Image (cartoon, rainbow, N blue to C red; front, top):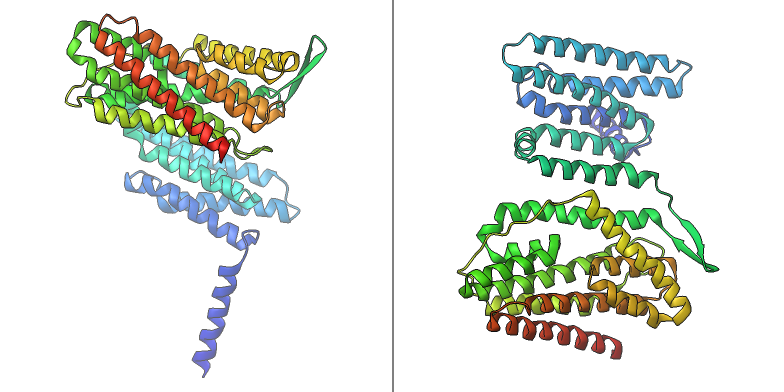
Length: 442
């Protein structure tokens, strides 16, 4: 009887703890200790001087000191003192690492020292109530520790030009973006044009980021298959795909089969990128998602894949050499394209109605369909364009991009190559147009 009552009491306590909200102090302390243990797991596995227990205690210490500061009369000096103690311990580990004969041990000791300070910060975050932030820091820190070898190999394998491009991209993404205003208005000829500088710059960063990621993929797998070369190369630069395939066909006429497929896949990549911009940058905002663009652009993508799969000789493959994945000049040029399109599109819409913006979208699509797409999305988000008008502008930009690739291919001396590009480009245009018409009718 007594044992049963005791078990009931224990079960009730366990249930109360399990049901306790994250705001409860005891739960925060337990979570801080668990996250510290998680962060110290890799250090323990690597057999370092500080492991699971040490990291768990450090996170718990940060949480305890933070709770005392928040819920008692103890000053913030206690929290600072705890941080100083962790730093001192880290310095001692670093000094110990300096005495090691193996230079690698020095770097590992420094990493452990910094990780200990991170563990202390995680405890503070959780105790303050930043649960998601604390978990995120713990997971990312553990990931950095686990991927040590891969990160080192990646950094050592970068060329000077690639390193410069990566640094410039980081400046654009993490330095310039945060200082831009969320909204800005200016007047031209008595017309007020609202802009969202942060959204515009985020689109620049997104397109540049796509180029960097796919530059790495093409550089790694470019010679192993035309599918990766054409599609991912098209995300980075569809014009580069056309230019490279022109060279292949001029040098090797028998390469026309997979060269045609590569250009078709580049068109598919271009349409995919435009669709991602149209849907991604209208999701989660104050406007509805541009779902009208999904059917016609999706049709272009599917047709391009289907034709490429059915017509290409996949036993062939060829490498692709892309230029620098990213440069400040390219980023500013891209930003200038769709910023000019945005401004003149707003003016054209005011002066000539929606047809004026359509003409601007067609013209800009010859230069950058992504720029025209982003401009239409920004105007849609700002309320200057409705969903049908923005969708039509995106489709016109996509059409003009397909046309310009066909015109570039028409410069080839290989009649079969340029005729097939013209025919298959027409198939993409007609298919996308019919899908748009069906969508409107339905």
